[in-house]
Length: 139
Image 1: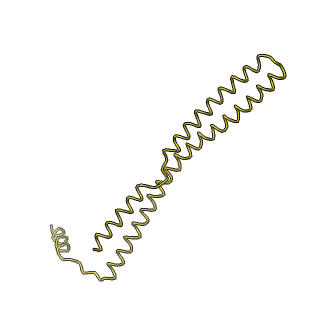
Image 2: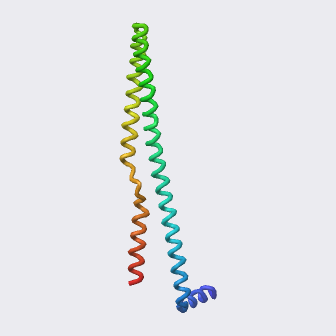
Image 3: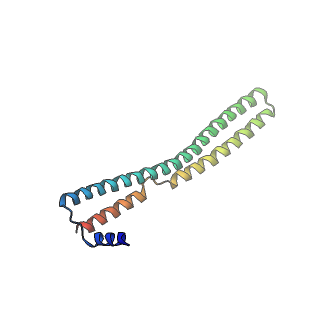
């Protein structure tokens, strides 16, 4: 019970602080706000970079499938000219199949890249809120 009264008594009397202490606290608070915003920006950019990496992987797969499709098409032409046998038909079918896979990977990767916005929106909004808060406090 006595502890509660001491706490209440300490809280009832406003603490007198010097201007230097107040300015020092403001400086520390501003530094912590900037650090927090930088941490948030870094986290947002990492998330967006991971999504961009996945889209880039799909585009890489599309390029690889395109290369294989071209190789199969070349093999088809060589086989058709060299043998004039049904072997070229199998190679042509494989080239078409790989081209379709490459086209699907390309389309998927392109759509994912279009959806990625590199601006760290939460950080920008938080910074705007901080500026507005600071303006209200200094007015």
